[in-house]
Image (cartoon, rainbow, N blue to C red; front, side, top):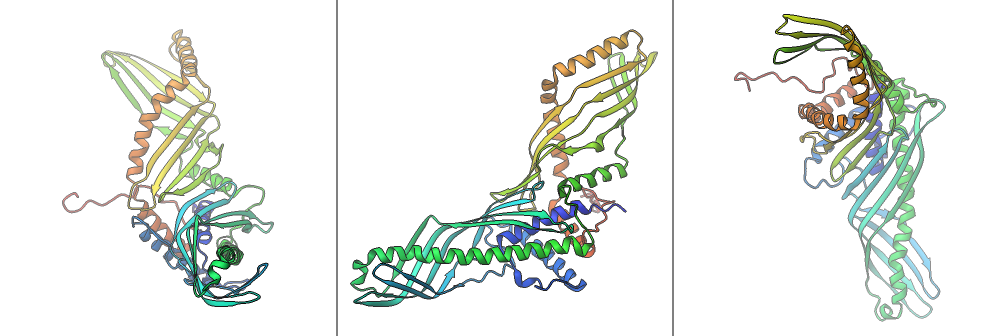
Length: 462
């Protein structure tokens, strides 16, 4: 049974990081060290349910917040006390409103480094409560209101593999900023003009006091949320990660094994026939080996911006070798001559970007693709003296005109890849394998995995 554990783990790690960094739900997970099988199944079911709700949310033109997010709104803020040179300020019964109406502006993860960057924006946060301002000769109290606009929260989270093979948060950096702030302190009376400078600084006082409180709460909850769910993926599924190799490279190694097990390396190329006038060319028994030697030569990233997710990959192969049997004919086979050719390509490098709108009902799109071929060598046998001419032409021309050849290949290849992408139903795949994960954890059998699900025609061939 083929189990692509590393691949499944990486996909869920990214989803967990996105949900945990943007909004934490600590009450949904037990705080004790161990969890029963029932707790594990409940957690997986909750994650799947939340994923499906997110899919439905992002079918809207302007998605706000995240489903099942236990963000307190209004959020209580501890009492604030501050002394100035000639006055004392006391803020109490402070509540912050609008925290749940956020938008994910940016999300980026580097899979090899296991790092995540997220930007979350809130149009407006309103903070209100009661104040008391005391001076040597007067005292004022009453309600106050502070409005912060265009609030932006930035989070950087990195993960690391511990010695016991579990994946945990390594570092968390958080910051909150805003573009504009307006405030209103009522019942100040004549103190409003005398102590205007104190009142102006009071709005910053509210922000400076709220900021460490919110960051401390978010820091604790993000660490707890990520570590709890990582524990579910690794230890409780009996899946440990080596700390000597990046989880991404482990996943790529698993993909190489899948390619070999599916019989794709060596790969048998379909026979080829071409006729031009009275001349004909046929190749048969064409084998290519080395395709499973692929590896990453750059980072693999996932970026989410403008309600679109972009996956960027840089993949290369080691030496590709192949052989074919060819036959040249004249006059529809009246005269024919067979031969054999062997060829090698030092390497093939591919860099591409694929876009998927977060509205999964929309199709995947190939945004960019770049190809690079290494040195090409061919040896031919069967054409007699003409073998040397063939070898010279094939060995020299492709290497001299390598970039022109790549430019000529890229457009047809782009069209062919886009045709394949058009047949993929992303939402159906996500829903299907999310339910498989809920049933089997990361022990999902991908033996029968197909990107393009075959649809059964209707009674009228529809």
